[in-house]
Every structure is written in structure tokens, then in C-alpha cells.
Image 1 (cartoon, rainbow, N blue to C red):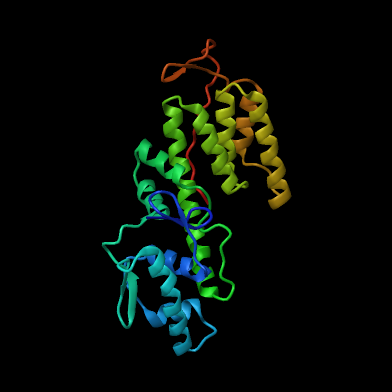
Image 2 (cartoon, rainbow, N blue to C red; image 1 turned 90 degrees about the vertical axis):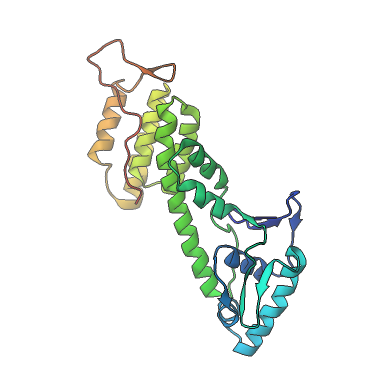
Length: 268
């Protein structure tokens, strides 16, 4: 069984059939349990999902919510006692958010590519429980944490792809990196370099102008000197190179300076 939480949350069978719940809180409860490895007190879960009810009624609401979960997952999926609740450790449930985190922790190219492919969208996109603010708060911080991990994944992946001359996917990932934070100048510079190295000089210059515009509109500041200098070098044609095999060959004019494709910087 597959629980997809990166993007619109969905529970699917191994064959790809979507399993629907008659209450949003059943899916929210499943997501919460699936991302924690320890059992929860029933009172804790009841207060999390039904804060407006007293303890007795909240626990009753929790019991009612377990019915569709047991129906969808099977009777042995939950490890339930009188006072605690968890997913059974032997229950086979693949969770994309967990697979993403596991892949993103490895430095190898294949692992980072897998992580980037798994990130289909922000955590539980479009999902909210307005009457359970504590759950919404948890979801908010999970969304932020996973977005930052995705940004770090792309920042690590792009130089590995460019080093082996695989520039089209590097460009795609650079655009995705910038989309996470349009004010992030290192992402703008990475895109400018990649455009220049793929002979898209006009696109590189246009990217700089977009960087100038958004920084002025949102923050009232000019780009950093590093960004302006890169723009000048591309404007003069110093960033245009030709590819050869797995790497890049030097310019015919040895006095021209070649731009590094990627300059790592922390994601803020």
C-alpha cells in the first residue's frame, strides 16, 4: 500500500487504486501516524484532532475515525491498545515523504535524482483541518522542513549533473530550485550560468533582469556584486563555451575567462 503525501495526499493500493475516506481526519490521522515511529496516547490524538470536544467525546470521535482506517488498511494495520495507538511495525506501507527523506540524505547522484523525482509537490498540498489548528501547525512545519530539504537536494544535485555534462536536467532542476524561493540569488546565478553554458545567452541576461526586478520589488535592494559581475561576464560573452564528451573544452581564446557552472551557497 502507498501513502502519497508529497502533493495532494492520497492512499493507494499496490495496484494504484485510490482508497477514499468519508472523513478527512481519517487521512490526516494516517499521515500523522505514518510519519512517527512511536505510539501515541489516545488522549493526545483526541486533543490534536478534536480540540473543541471534551476528553470523553474526543476519544469517541477518535474511535469512530478508526473504523474507516481499519476498513481501508485491514484489521492488522493498527497497533491499538486501550490507551495507545500506532501503525503496526509489520504493516507494509510505503510513504513517499519517508522515501524522499531517505534518498535525500545520500550524496550519490542516483539517490539525489530519486529524491528530486519523489518530490511531486509540497507536503499534503491543498489539505487542511480548520477545526484542528495544532494539526495544521504540524503540517505547516513539515511542509517547510521538506521544502528546505528539497532545496538542499537540488543544490547538491545540480553540480553533479553539470559535472558530467548533463545540462538539460540540470536546467530543469535549477528552475525548480528558484521556484522555491524567487529571491534566492544563488539560484538565479546558477540558472544564468547554465543558460550561458548551453548557448542561451539571451535567456541568461533575461534571468539577470528578472533577478533585478524581483529583488527591487520585494526587498528594495539591488543584486549582490557577485551577481552583477556574472551578468557583466555573460554580457561580454565570457560565459559561452562548447561541450566536449563528458566535460567542457577550453575557449579558443586563452585569455577569456570561463565561468564555473555552479557556485554553491547556503539556502536561506
